[in-house]
Structure formats: C-alpha cells, structure tokens
Image 1 (cartoon, rainbow, N blue to C red):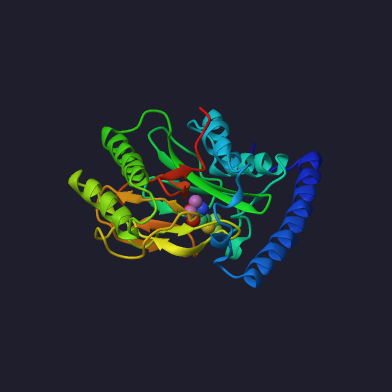
Image 2: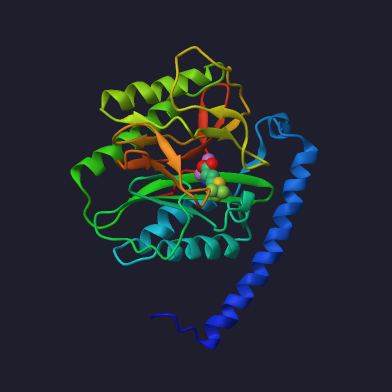
Length: 289
Ligand code: MF3
Ligand code: CO
Ligand code: CO
C-alpha cells in the first residue's frame, strides 16, 4: 500500500510503457490508413464480412471479466488494467487508448458521470453505479460496448434508471431493419424514457463503426419518427443511450473528457454495436452468458 514501488513493479511498469509506445505507433498507422481509405469504406463491404469473427471479445471483458472484480474498494484503474491486459492477451488493441489523447483503455463513468470517465485511483464504494465502456480492435474491425455495474447494494431509483436505460436500448434495437429512419431510433428511446420520468442526454450520440472507431452516421437517442436518414442493410453502428435521472444537460470537466450531469443527478448508459440486415439486425456485442 501507499506510495512504495517495488523494483518488480517498476520493471513491470517499464515494460508496459514500452508496449504502450508500440501500441501507440500501430494505432497511429491504422488511423492514417483509415483516413486514406475514406470514412464510408466499411459500408462498401456489404455485410461487413470479417465482422462478427472476434467482436465478442470486448463483451467478454465488460460482462464476464469485469463483473468478477467489481466490489467496494476496487479502483477504477484496476478495472482499466484488466481491460488492457485482457484485450492484449487476445491479440487485439484497445481502441480508446491514445484515441485523441485519451490516456486509458476503457471509460469508467460513475454515478453522475455521463460518459468518458477516465480510470483513476478513485475507489468504488457501496451504492455506486458504474458504466464500463470498452472497444476492441481486432483483425481490422472495431466492436464497441458498455454496460452498467452495481457496487454492492444500490438505491431503488438507481436500479430503475439502469433498467430503463437497458430497456430503452433494447426497444430501439428491436425495431431495426432496412428502410426505417434514424429518427425512429431516437423517438423510440425518447418516448419510452420520458414516460418513465427520466431524460435523454443530447450532447453525445451513437455512431457508425467498422474499420474506424467513429464514423457516419450520428445516431441520436432522441428525435421524431420518420425523420433523418433511412438505414440500409450492411450498415454497422452503435446505439448507446445515456439517460439522466434529472435534467438532460451535461458539462465536460477540465480534464477535457469527463462528462457529468449539470444538476449532479445520476446517469446510466448501455451500448451495443449492431449490423443492419434486410429483414432485421444482428447484435455484434452480445455476451455468451
Ligand atoms: N467508447 C466510446 C463510445 O462509445 C468512445 C470512447 S472515446 C475515448 O463511442 F476516447 F473516450 F475512449
Ligand atoms: Co460508441
Ligand atoms: Co463505447
């Protein structure tokens, strides 16, 4: 405990820094390639063959692995280390690491943090709710997913917020098929969430994903039925509603990443990566359990 660092720890840290430098280089190469290929490249790949091969990896992390260690007393850094190790052990890269300067392998967003919480020495305590968001990059493809965790026993209100957020995401996923409108997704989520007395965050949205981490289209979690772009078979995007117990407004802290509710009310989020087919959809980030 405390600030003492053993020689062994120092050696391990040194090794990790080296690995991270190599990773940074690789990721930068990948990002460069993607820009050259053009941002809509993945749509041209039809039903994105290649996708679905190893995209279950990130789900294993967030559902199965992280679940094992979440308890009062655990630091969000420890969750991040687990994500980092797990992704690397499986021959993949963690997409958030060094993404636009983001310093960690996962986002850990507790209580009134809406999204993009940076893993740190923050210690989880009984009653906290927490979103862990992971994105694995493997064999040229990204899979992006997040879910909520409860630390010990949480309030009835927190449970209701979490359940409502999950149900909102699933209701929106279930309407997916070729030729519906992006606005149908937003209105499904907004109508359901507001009827439960909660609000939909407007400052962040879902996104196209594939060979690049974030692409067109933007998938808003609020809006009107029959508006916006029509979706097509072969598209891959995320649905990742952020739902607040209080007002929908957010602000970003001085670290440039952490987004919180303006009124300090609780916030919850779930995320899946989905592919669109003629008749429906496929969820690429489902857990086996
Ligand atoms: N995974 C987040 C999303 O759902 C993005 C995180 S970007 C990071 O789009 F840089 F904060 F990691
Ligand atoms: Co996402
Ligand atoms: Co995500």
